[in-house]
Structure formats: structure tokens, C-alpha cells
Length: 352
Length: 180
Image: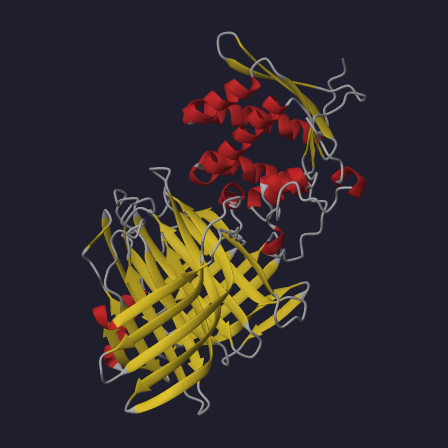
């Protein structure tokens, strides 16, 4: 569809000005991928984030793999890394976007196809992923003030993936049976800014009639939650956008742990510094949306928690990203029919 | 005194001096901490058997002195390059490394707390300092790896579950009652 082509172009193109040597250093552009395997209960997060400008800026690569531990179905193990590299080369074009970090990362992003290749050294493993967008792309170019700048984003909550994760003890194929979500975020803001925070999640559900339902949620907040913006909830069925709930029709509640606990921090130097902290974290997320014709109730049971700590390069402030994932179920009234969806997985991010 | 440093000792000497020079001109806070913790102190470090004696003085300016070490002298900071890699990568915390003897420290409590503050300070500054990152990269690239690094490490092992766990304490000791 021509219209989708235009959206995909604007959704995927790099937004950071690459030719001006005076481009502000608080520019950010990041490409975020979530992979969920319903058959083997495996979850992957992959993110490439550009900040600053070519030759001055940085490329941060983040990878998290959650999978059953040594064949156990109940115990999950978490692996991952956060790696910061200098952004040395100016990309030849914004679209398609092609760049590499020598001996580590190669990425090619076009509007109808992407390919990522990671060769990590310590611990040694490879991650390859290519994908083709299938779901209705949505671009939310929110150019209104956000902290000291602005933020916009776009997402494709259905991509046909193909790839693998390999290591000397692991050979994990990523097939088209996996669910793949992708978003691209861009804007100008500082991680240390008091106004910068959000809750985002994606849930995917497999129905007994082989339909795939996908739910995407976003809500902005200030770091101390004194200000909470109105949320968005998008509902997809078989990759087509069916319904959007906005504002007061959506309610989200968190059930928190009763006592503070230590949770793993994604490796990177700040992991050593912050991981002695005990923090309260959500255990359960419940969402209810209703406009008297359509309604949905979603229950997300968090079984894996991890934190990413990002420093602000100017103000020595930190932003804490809680990465949460687990199983989900839902009751949905859509197109005049009520469906109970029992088999689902989710990935959520809680930023403050 | 023979000054035949091994290749690894030479690398450490270059990196220690580069570290001091880097923070001297780029980070007032850490430089202040370095002076507070190290001035008029002496320590023998041992990383994978590369042993050096470090001391610091201040006449016109802060100076780090590095000397070779007598074979029989006891080191008070003993570790392996691979363990330091684990701490800097964050696959284990500094606390975990110390409590599991991956970093073995000996010294007066006040000095140990000072060193702890200094190391945490450097870990905090690292992600936002290209100089410190380059210095670490130089160590990481040039220091030999002794542990096979093919294994993916489960993040569950990152932290010490609790300090002063009584699991390893002998029952006789656990049952000792102290009366005042």
C-alpha cells in the first residue's frame, strides 16, 4: 500500500541531523526490537541507540535474552549486555540507513526490510535478525515539548522475523513463528531531565481460532510521577489496526512488590554501581479500557525483571529503565464478539 | 634493585600513570578523592601475578610512584584481569567480587573504605568519560584472558544475595552468646 510506504519511510529514517557539525548533542534516535517465542517461552530485547552526532556521538547497543534455564520450564535465566561505542562514521543516507561498528555490529534498515548482525566478544555470541514489516505502521510524531526538547515515535507491532542467537552452548533459531515488534524513537531530550519518563508495553495473544491480537500501550510521566499524561492503547488483530483507546477510557494499575528487592541490572559499568540498591518493582500490571462499545481487560504477570541504567552526559543524572516481561491473558470485546485470550506474552518498560 | 618489569607490569605502569593524568585534568572530584585516599600511603597490587608497589606523594604536585616488588612481599590487593573485567562489565558487582574473594583486599578498614569509594567513583565516571573508557579498552585488549569466555553468564549471579549470610558459618560459632 502506497500510504504505508510513506509512513514506513518516515518511521524508519534516521532523524538526527548528520551533516551539521553544530547539531545539538541531546539528539537521540533509537531502533528497538522485541522478539517473543510462544513455543519455547523465549524473549529478546534488542536496541540500537544513536546519540549526539556522527564523529562526536555514541552508539549504544543493548541486548537481553530471557529463556528457560537448563531445560526448566519454570526457572528463567537472563543474559545480556549494554555496550557503548563511539559513533565514528556519518551514515551515507538516512533511508536506507546503513552503518557498522567494526568487528561488532552491522545494521541495514530500509522501509520494507531490516537486517542486524551482532558479533559480541565477551561472552562470545552472535545475533542475526532480519525482518519484513507486516502490521499497519503507526507514526506518532509528537513534536510538542518533552522535558527540555521533544520526542516522537513510530511502531510496527508485527514483523516477520528470521535469524538466530548462537553461542558455543546455544543454537537458537528465530523463525516466523516468533512475534516481532519494532519501534523507532527520536527526539531531543536529556536522560536526566525531570520530565522524562514513560510506561510502554506490547502484549501479543494467540487465540484458539489462530488469530493474533496485539496491544500496544504508551503513557508519559515525569520522573517522580507528579505528572502523568493520558495514555494511548492500540489494538491490532492479525496485523491490522482495529481500535484505539485514548485518554480516560484507559486505566492502568500496577501491583507492586511488598518489600524492596534487588533486581539484575543489564551489564555495563553502571551495573556494578547501582545493583546493591533494593527497589520496589511492579509484579502485576492490569489494564482496562472501555468506551461502552468495545472493551478490553489485560492481565500481565511479570516473571522477569531487569534494569537498565542510563547516564546523562551533562548533569550526572541517571534514568532507570525497568524492563519487565512475562505471560499475559485478556478478555476482549471487539467487533461485537467477546473473546477470552489465554495464551499471551508481553514486554514492558517502565522509565523514571 | 633490579628493574626488570614483565610486559604486564609495564602495561600496568603506563595505565596507572595515564589514569592519574587523565583524572588530574578532567575530574576534580575524583582527583580530590584520589589524593585523600592515597597520599602518603603505600600498597602492593598483584593482578595475575603482575606485582607493583604504588605510593603517592605531594610536593609541588600529586605524584604516583611505582616500584618493583620484592618476591617475598605480601600484596594487599590481589585479583585477576578476568575478575576485573567481570566487575567493569557489571556481570558481577564490586561487592560480589570482594565478598567472594575474587578481589582480595587487606588493610585498615579506613583505607579499604577509601579505596572502595575511589573505585565506585571511577565506575560511576567511566560511562560518561571517553578517556576512562579508552583506558579501560586498552587494559581489556592487552591483558591476557585466562577464563574461557564462551559461556553466557546468567544475570542471577550478578549480585551477592545478602551480606553476612550465615550459611557458611560454623554452627559452634553461630551459637556463641555474647553477654556484656
